[in-house]
Length: 329
Ligand code: P6P
Image (cartoon, protein in one colour):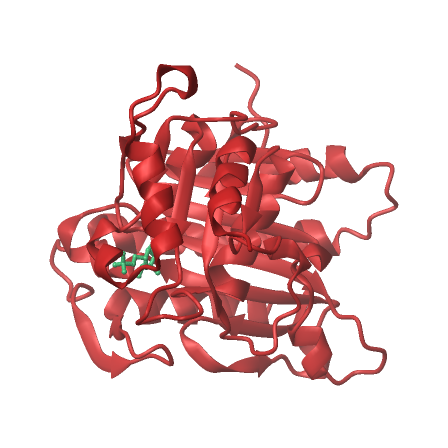
């Protein structure tokens, strides 16, 4: 069977765009890091001491797992030497890494290096989420505005899910495409061309353990999904893995809605705009879906801080619109 690699796919996508190849090279370096991390994730628990916590706390007050740090340093080293990026921001790093001028390229790389890492020790799928932007400012130095760009400015958004198979899903604005790693030869091949999310699903995904700290509108919305109504396929099924990449991947494939609402503990939500909400919003919109804070389109947001959090409603277009009808003023 004819197999298509990511590089072949990107070259076909860009052949009329006069691309310089720098973007293709950047994306290929992401795959190199993904293969290295996939190997570590899949042998975690066998020998080595890669499981467990480092004893450090990240900027969000969360325990840093050893694999978090491994994933972060793997991406920083590989992307930093790729010659394609001038800055790297990460959920695991308070401040950006600015690449030295002789190694710098024209892109900015933002990532959650290993999302869902609290699930590592219980063998639940985890993932990497990333965004690529162009440096906007002229001159050699990277400015604050370069790092705090509107979500819609993304050149590409994507994620890698380290699960029963390792998959790489991305969009560069021309559809959403999935590649699956063939571990026997260490290459990713196109397995899910031009992915589209169902217009409406029948699954809602949220941590209902937070119900006591939600506002009334959110409680009413969840009760709507649980009510009986044959016309709108309700009650919906409840599914929540607690690893966003896995919950999102299921939503992309099967439809429905994933939610992480604001609550009295997290008045701006828990998920990070730059490293979680924005890249997945870019993907879901390119697959025909919708992503909002409940009031505002995620991709219209211009963040004020690289670690800014936002409430997130993401998935099938009609299901997110239903959520907005309960949440908008
Ligand atoms: P909670 C993992 O830490 C994460 O950032 C996402 O992967 C996941 O969706 C969410 O937090 C889970 O949060 O509060 O439900 O445990």
